[in-house]
Amino acid sequence: MITPRERAITCKTLICLLKSLIQNGGNAVEDDEDIVTISLRNDYEARGTVMNVDAFMNMELTQCTLARLVFDLDTHQLVPVDVQHFDYFFIKGTRIRSIDLPDRIDGIREIEKQLSLMRRRIQTKFPKISREEKYKQMRRSTAINDDGPTT
Image (cartoon, rainbow, N blue to C red; front, side, top):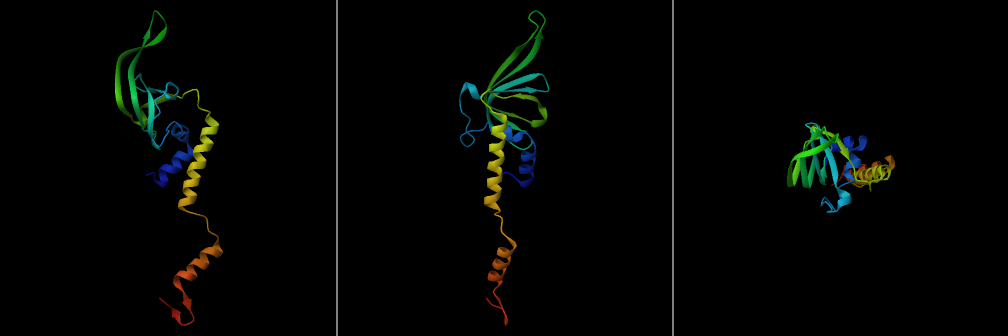
């Protein structure tokens, strides 16, 4: 369950773009196009499919590969060392340096879609009611007559 504070943070940041990576109600799709690469602050790199993202950018990955990146002087490239495989991997949001999204993601369209979903959830939970309608509902619920309230 998302709290109002988390919803506000998500709507005001690019976390809604990361939420677009979650598919099928939280079940990650096993496809090469859905693999996300996350660079961590300790020079490690995690690659996997996103299972969940919260408002503080804490991420849960499935089928994750974690590797330490070392610069090779001969090839002048970063080479993965100490590769480890995990079925489930949790990354705290403060440890993330950058996220490489899959090529299939259209950023603007995905952000608009996530924001419209959040707005729709808010409107169904708290529908907008005019002042006149609120007054009518209040009058009906209290049922005030000239003699006083009735039950």
